[in-house]
Image (cartoon, rainbow, N blue to C red; front, side, top):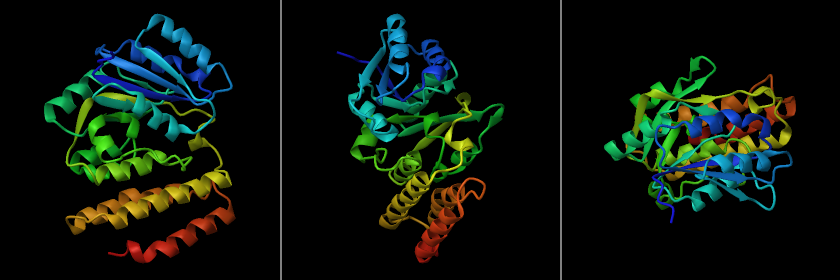
Length: 279
C-alpha cells in the first residue's frame, strides 16, 4: 500500500520536449517520501515513452493513460482521485521547482495546520506579485495555483475541483472556490516554483474564439461563486471582486490578443453583470 506523505500530480499532454527539467527537479527533491502521478491526456507525441523512461529510474512515478483527450482539468481531478498522499501539489510538467520545494511546503502546512501552503512563483528572473498580496490577505490568492501544497481532505470535503467544462482559466475558478472555503493559507518565501514561458504557450498566442468563450464561462463560474457566498465584511467582498473577477476580466480583455467581435462579447458580459458588481 502506498503511504507517501505528498502526491505530486502532473497532467501531461504532448509535453515530451519540455519534461526534463521538472523530472530532474522531482528526482532531486530533499523530501523523498512522495508519489509522482502522471496523467497522460491521450498525447500524440512521445510523452508516454518519456514518462516510462523516467519510471525506470524512479519507482515513485506512476502513469495513468486516459483513453481520450479530456482536458487538463479532468487530468488533474483524475490524479487527485488516484492520489494516496495526505497533501497534494498540482504541478505542470513543463515547469520546474526548487529542490527543497516539497519539503519546505510540507513542513509549513503540517506545522501551521493550514489548508494551503504557498511558495513564491517566478517567471524568468522575476518573482510574480501575487505571493506578496497573499501574505497580507489570502483572498488575493487568484493565480499561481501550481506554487502551493493543498490538504487533500480539505479539497475533497469542500468539493474544490477544477471545472472540466472550462478549457482555459480552470485554475482561476479552482482558486476562487478555494479562498472562500478556507480559513488558513500560509506562505513561505525561501522556496520557489519556476514557470517556463514557452513560445507556443497560451500567454504568447492570439486567443481563438473558443478560448475566449471559455474565459467567459470561467467568469460565469466566478460570478456564481461570488453571489452564493456570504461575505463577513465589505472589504473582503471588494477584494474578491477586484482580484477574482475584474482582474481576470481584464486579463481576458487583451486588445492585442482577441478579435473585435470577442471584445464585444466580453463587454456584453460586463454590462450584463455590472449590477451584481456594484456593492
